[in-house]
Length: 455
Ligand code: GDP
Image (cartoon, rainbow, N blue to C red; front, side, top):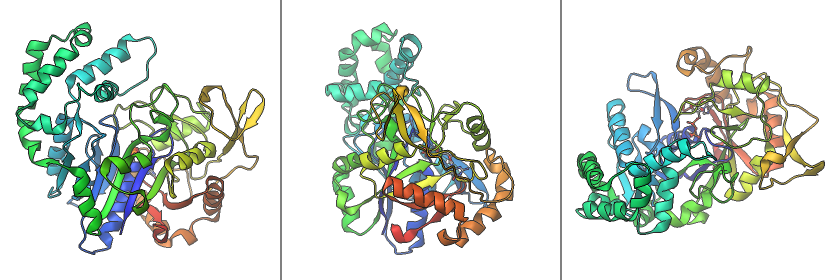
């Protein structure tokens, strides 16, 4: 039975969506007649999980989810927790898209407590990004203003209100409470209220059957012995308290936060940190091991390092085990899942294990990481999955060529991995204090060497 929480160890875009899909696949392979549910517990449409899955015609298809849990791509149950910034229009679009690609028969559950993100949140976010002096580099999806409204309490519109007759009054009240702020960015409440109502009229009806007291439904999955896969949306460096303040997101994304909001118990779950071999960041925010040319430029090109939500180029650094170790600590991690080994196949890797702060070496991550210099191990690592340095950025074009090579490695299992890669993994795990359960060598589901005995 699979019971996991999957969370990003670094600056986001680590491949959490793919890891979720691998777990769904593994759960399906048990053929035990049990249900499988994937759950989003925080964040909103600022996340973008890209999945490559087999379509009905057997061809590889790209599938991107922003609002919906990754399980949407594989017809399993999908749930949305109360701490999510829920964008109903975006969610409904994703539902429709899933219907076109797959025969969608899964069940959707949305906590009645989940707050609803509306147009004014996005407009406020975009206005701040364009007009304020200190920018965060957000995706302009409205996440910051949404969580401010949640914290203010009176300005939170719950999903239950949204799908009920109360919506029109609640919206009026909230627009009134936010009047001064909204007028500043050119929103006048009367006609705006009617515009929102009209825009949401159909979607409210479509989504109404999904409202649930989610904490009780979650208990039912657990008691029934079902597979429960919980997914985080961002990387640990972006956590509202423990991230690189102020270049962070506005939610509590560390894995242990999932349990109280979903009514689940930590003891029933394994926590998996997903770590790209090399850290990346999009938007503002520092990376101590940042490489702008050489390794960095090559990796951006070979790995196609561009964000799923905004298309912005990600910045790349050398492996930073100190950041990964801190992610293990903060997330109470049991296991790691390492992605993008194919991108760095054949490249020399330096590994950061300490920081230099004003000439003093420390093995801790300080509040302000823009002041630190990386201290690398003298030893460097290099592993090769296959001959040649393939550019894997054009995933769909290169797939046919690399699929047999990847398949052979997956079939060989962990013991038959190139010894230099095993050495990297073993030394990484020793440093971090957690075992690596999956080594991903390609973007598609199935392209992972899974050590299922660790699950
Ligand atoms: P997420 O938000 O953490 O799910 O990550 P994104 O979807 O934003 O970005 C991860 C990208 O990396 C996706 O396009 C994945 O398909 C891709 N990916 C995941 N694992 C691997 C891997 O091992 N190799 C390659 N080449 N791509 C991978």
